[in-house]
Structures are given as structure tokens and as C-alpha cells.
Image 1 (cartoon, one colour):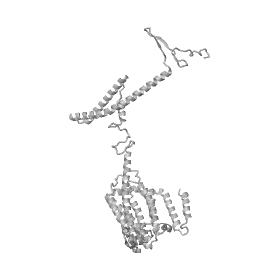
Image 2: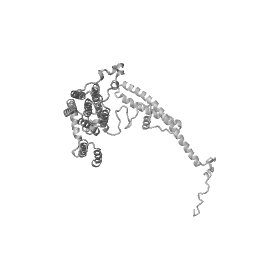
Image 3: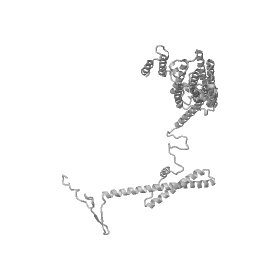
Length: 486
């Protein structure tokens, strides 16, 4: 600009738009002498032309896509027909691979027909012929909703497959087998526990009912809460990390399970009957229904003259009164129901053992320790809250404890004996896996410290005369545990 060329590009050029957007016509002469006047295309007109072309291309693409979908729907039906015709012809000719040859011929015919239809549509639009390739047709066929044989991609779910995994290895099959075995064992053990628990509860309730006695609300709350925690821990079974070479028992009616179930029931009911007889011999408690009149057949005249206590007995059962029979039945039933869960928990080699299930182990241990503490009257407050009466003497207490030990040890020995007879491989493999899963001695330091700390706290609170029933012992133990057991 400073050299004198500042207005070089400022002069109007014929056929270009001025500042107002208009164009100057351009006159040209053809070789034959014809004069033609044209007008240059503005930027707005060019953009409009491009947009129209894009819109037309999009419409043509949508039309072509819908036409291809219609063709695929029709060709799928034709392909099936062609396949059947070709297969019948080849089978009649004695071809051993008639099915495979017919499938190949039908597929080739379908691809040829697809290309022919696409070419006809392209010529009808006046453009160059662009027929879709085989890969493009297969991709479009995968999206068809009405197709009969879909192309399964890697990782897709299938109705014919038992499970689907995207992991490119067989590790998922091993995981499925481990979890399936754990589920099977868990279902069988739950069936055994339900059968034994229901029968034990039914017998204990019938014993109490026939003697005009029932359990107290506090007893049912305590046992129900502890058993609920144990049942939750019992139901959340975890499979082991390695696949065992031994298969689990598949049914509760297997001799190792069914005979064990019958034997455990006989042992538990026998111990309960023996404990009830001990109470009857010690106290002479007998049935105390008024005049032995059946509840369902009480006449109206007797109801009008009856006392409130008699009406309560006849209408909703006897009111609760603490008795030795109720105390003994409560202790025996609680320990037996705990024993049922402990014995029938299968554990290794197909699921984590009882030692590794800390919640189950602690809940069962707390119930057993509580039952023995109530039998020895360690905490009078606990016995009073549960409305338990003291046992007559030490000889009677020892006999009750022997009954409890017989019920526990007898069922454990019987269950292991049935496994030894009918499923020895499972028994020996379980012992080997349990020994391998036990913690090493150097890992027992912290659990041992916690155990001795709890034992010391229990001794100071329950047994030591100087600190017995002192709440400061529990408060101090709580804060000491925060400091020492980190």
C-alpha cells in the first residue's frame, strides 16, 4: 500500500458480487457467434445448493436403507425356501453334505439377488451403480428384528448357552462351578437345619403345653435374636477360592445326609426326653390343667363360674409362671438349636468353613456360653431377666450339663460317622482343606489377645467379688480395648 499498490484489489471485477451482495452479469461469445450472458454464483447461493444436495443425499440414503430392510425381510423368507428346495434336491441326488451345500447355495443366491435389487434402484435414480458388499449386508441383517438366524458376536448373550462371559478364557466356567457347588451345599444344609429346628421346637412346645407351661417373652426374644444373627451368617455362604476335585452331595436324601438327619433327631429328642424325666423325678411336676377339661369342649356353665385365671388358660393358654421344667427345656432347646447349625454347616471343601465365618462362630459361641452361664447362675441379673429358676443342686446341674454335652458331641460324631461311611472322600478332603486354611501361629497373636481380654473382663464383672456387677468395669474395658487392641 505504501508503494502505490494500495488500490490494486479494489477495482470491481465483472461477474463478482459487490458490497450489496448483487452480481455483475458476464457476457461471453461462443465459437458459433452466439452471445451468452451468465451470472456468477454468490456465496449464499452456493451454500444453499450444497445444503440441497446434502438433504437430497440424506433422503436417498434413508430411502435406500428402508428399501434394503424390506429386501432383507423378503429375502430371509426366500432364503429359507431356497434352502429347503436345494437341500431336498441334493438329498435326492445322494449328497452326504446336502445341508452345508444347500446353505452355501442359498446364501450365494441371496447375495446375488440383493446386489441385483440394489443396482436396479441405483439405475432408477440415475446414479452410478453402488452395490453393497457381503460384510455390509451381514451387518444390516444383524439389525433386522424379524430375522430367524442372527449373527452372534463375541460376548453376546444366548438363550442356548447356560451363561455368557466376555472374558477370553475358561476361568468363568470354573467360577460358575464353584458358585454352583456352594449354592447346592448351602441349600441342602438349610433344608437339614429347618427340619431339625422345627421338630425340636415342636417337641419342646408340646412338652411345655401338656404341662401347662409356656416360654416367657424375654426367653423368646433372647433366643430369637441370637438365632436370627446366626441364621443370617449361616445363609451368607461364600465359595472357596479353588475348585475341589470332589463333587458335593446332590440331595438331602443321600444316605450320608438323610441317615445323619434321622440320627441327629433321635439324639436331640432322646436328650430332651431324658432332661424332662429328670425334672419330673426331681420335682414331681405334673399337668395342671383345671379338672383336665379339654380346651375346645369347655361348657358355658363352667365358663360362667370360672375364675379369670381359668378363662385365660382355656382361651389363650396358661399364663407364664417360672418353673424348673421351663428352665431346663429352655437351656436344652437353645443348645440343641445351636448344635443343629454347627453340625449341619457343611463348610469345606465347597464353601468357607465355620472357623472362617466369624459372624456365625461368634453368634453360636455366645449362645452356648450364655446357656452354660445361665446353668451355673454366673449372672443373677441375666437369670432374673430370662425368668429362670435356680437348679436344685450341683448334682442336678452336672447331669443337665452332661445331657447338653451328649447332645452336642453325639450329633457331631454321628454326622462325621455317616460321612466316613457313605462319603469318605468328602470327609478327608474337608479335613485337608481345613488344616490348610487354619491360620499360622504368628497370625494368632491379636485374636488370642482379644480372647484373653474378654475373658478377663468377664471374670472381673461376673466372678470377682470386689468388682462384681460393677458398671465401671465394662466402661473401663471398652476404653482399654480401644487403646490396647488396635
